[in-house]
Length: 310
Image (cartoon, rainbow, N blue to C red; front, side):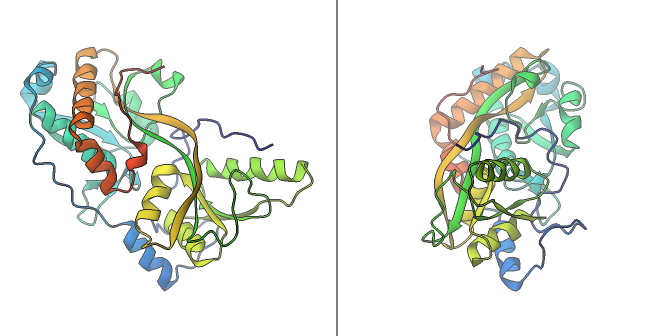
């Protein structure tokens, strides 16, 4: 038996930059080869998405609080260190899946959008004062719902990628004896430790831990045969597969799926409803699928957006 991963994503485990290829002095596997640099460049590629067909919906725009309408801009706080969700582009601006979704929501509500870089742990305490919303790969959980409202827009979990053809016969969730590449500083550290303990308890071979500073190098290790499997949050793994030019493929199912939510102050239920309606409009018109598909994450589509789903 292998322990199921607990829904701990997006807590305090984003201390290390996940903007791919970051250079930090920590005791992990390194050595950016030419191959890893190429994969890193591919993984950092930013798709072009046409949002011009998204139009203002007056009924939803009317729900936006008057001060936000007068300002004309929806202000977002995000930790720009988690590609492909949100990270810094080559021009220094905020890019990523969440930024494109935010732009779409803004168009539906007749608002411009602006994202300000923030420390992840400080976003929620600043909602309703410094920021109108927080869209930064937040997993919806009961503790957060005690503090803020959250509008669901995406589903994510943990997933696996292997070299094309799965030459090492990886069969998740069994990782016994496997060389497992992952990004250090994420909850994958705990997953590897839990799987290793379970393997050894049952008398099997332990997991061979291969932590990397950046997900690009972890993905390159799996693509090049230096590791048997890459594990990570499903958006990150899906994006690496999308940009690997066919060298990686997913194996197994997405595990421990949980909803992502846009954070809104509990004191602004009308704004939460406006954003929920805007997200639902993007879903119903196909714009949400276009955004997610461009980033290699269409598998995270949900059918219905809700405020504070339980």
